[in-house]
Amino acid sequence: MQLDDLFDEQKQIAGVLIKQGARAVIVSHETGLAAAVTRRLYKHLKKEPSPSGLLPDSIEYFFSGQNRTHSSAFWRCYKAAQASITKHATETKPKLPMRGKILAVAYDHYQRICGGAQHALPIDRMWHLTRVVRSNDQIIEAQCRVCSAVYLTRNYETGFVCERCEENSRTTK
Ligand SMILES: [Zn+2]
Image (cartoon, rainbow, N blue to C red):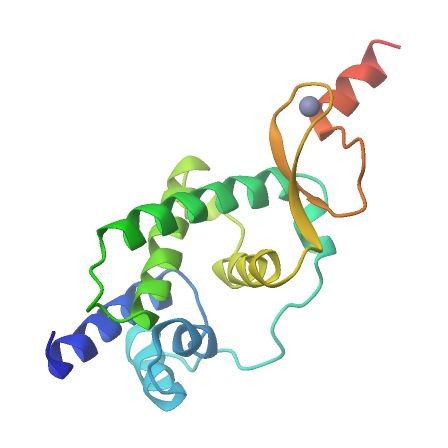
């Protein structure tokens, strides 16, 4: 792969991520493009500067109300995208834009599952989720002990029961 092609691929993926709502700093992080480049690209595509405040850092967000179902669905999409994209990549392909591509493909898949962008959790939050799940064991996958469906849980939630089973047991009491 030529350097120019690589740069084109990076910019193409960056464009997709920006349109999906990712802020410039995240796009830079996931594509390997310089932050100044992704900020310019953001402004060009969105006609406004990228938000630059603090990135979300609370993990409780992933578990409040319906968010657990969303986070778990997104994580499934992410794992599937990662498996298929890394499988089809050759050794000579660079690692970095690939990470951005995995995020873009996963987020697109997730949005379609939840019925469109207006129902989806923001990509910045989902990016944060991938960072937490990949980097430590604060968040793990666990089966609901009633229905056996797999959800993301905090690592201390032993004997986890999902929201729906929780609700069913309340209404049948
Ligand atoms: Zn359940």
